[in-house]
Amino acid sequence: MTFRQYPSTVTAPHTGLRQDIRSPRRPSSKTLVWALLLVVGALLVVIAWATASPPGSSPDEDFHLASIWCPTPLDGSCDTRIAEGELQPGESRTQVLVPQVVLASAICTAFHPENSGACVDDLTNNLYWTGRVDNGLYPGGFYDVMHWFVGPDVQASVTTMRIANGVLAIALFTATALLLPRPSRRLVTYGYLAVSVPMATYLIASINPSGWAFTGVAVAWAGMHGFVTQPHRRRRYALAGLALVGALIGALARADAGAYLGVAAAGIVALHFRSVKEKLWIVALPAAVTFIGLIGFLSASQTDALGGMAGTTGPGDGDLLFSNVLALPQLLIGAQAEALNWVDTPVPAIVWVPGVLLAGALALFGMRSVELPKGLALFGLVSVYVVLPVLLLQRSGMWVGVEVQARYIAPLVPVIMATALWNPSSRGTFRLTVPQTILAYLTLVVGNSVMLHVQIRRFVTGLDVHGLNLSRYVEWWASPISPMFTWLLGSLGFAMLAAALFLVRRPDTAGSAQPEIERPAFAEA
Image (cartoon, rainbow, N blue to C red; front, side):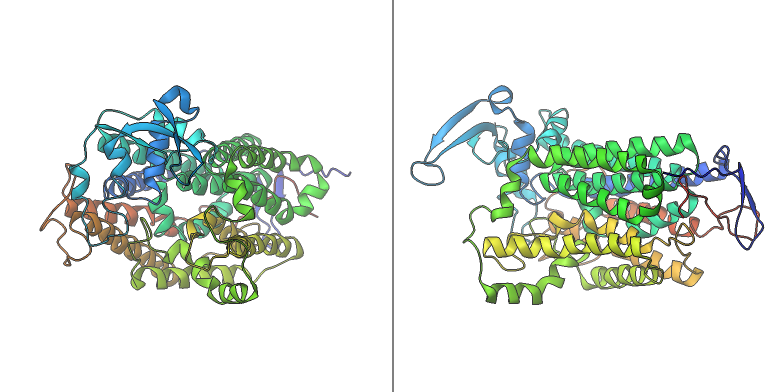
């Protein structure tokens, strides 16, 4: 194995520009001010989404709430009993004792978009038995952490959990962005922000484990990528640490997130294969991420779904396969188009159509440069993204739109986007023009604003009431900030956050008309 030595300064090809790679430049005060504004914007978005709905609003939240109130091992956190014949004669199931509002908040609103969240206010803290609780189906760590926030007021506890999950994501994404080389910062901004509306934003500010899965896989990929591309040692190893933290978060949330961590790690090895081949020990970080993911994958019985989803009819035939292949795009664009909550709150076309077009345009433009390593990485990621839901549907005998939801595969979307945008030649990605940036900005800002309005309307009055003013005819609301003002703050916050699209347009070397060439930490032949 040959090790190449590089001088402390390197000359960028065709420019004569010399770059000192001995120590990173400290962020300027202007950069820190902008970072603070972006963080404040992200916090406003999280708070708005976190307070927009009552407990029980996200998919399977009755299950997740009970699992948070009574995390495993069940015999130590709550009163339990064994119920016989709850599901079918002769079958026993562990039940736990939880407040009625934990048990039933989802029942009174799910699948009834015309209903507001008012019925939740009629529920009490009286204790009832339920078997809808995690008993080894999920890895469980997510529920253990959320249990720290449990208090006597269920609504306040759930809101606190949602905000805490959002703050965790903000902290990890902010740290990752600040540590990445500037070209990779642009790569992650374009790749991640373009697919953040609406599902990712909604899930991150929720108590659904899919939010942690999305955050964990995205941070792990960016950290591994930065470990290979960051030329400064301290930042490089800080990024490695973030990759491991992201992997841990994903593995604690869902078994499928553990599998996606292995897929993302394999994609990084393929994408940077020349660096890995030259210095084999680079693979230690992807291997560690894969190992963490494997532990999470094997620690939950969710993996049984590979043989067919529970309660389904069994393997399908060739006709089902044909029908699912034709309908598959509906599922693949679900991160931007699938209905929210219990799949009962439709995403308006003004949100998902421009969003899908933006993501597609960015991906296609990024694929102007495809070398063999990038091609293999992209092929592997897309193959998993496409084949996995088809396999699950076929094994379960179900068709697209039933059982397998877009949020199950959504954590792979930002990884695929960032991989497609990577340009191996320039060690970064292209810069959008000013008109393109404005168009992308408006697409995302308008999309978030419209969907947040729909989400608040869904629970303030139900979707059978229309109109711009969310503070009229209020039937349910639990925040001290009015519904209309919450919508305005959330919209403003995302407008501030999306300003990152303009910030990453700046040339890679301040004060120079020539582009800076980021020298990889491990030079590629």
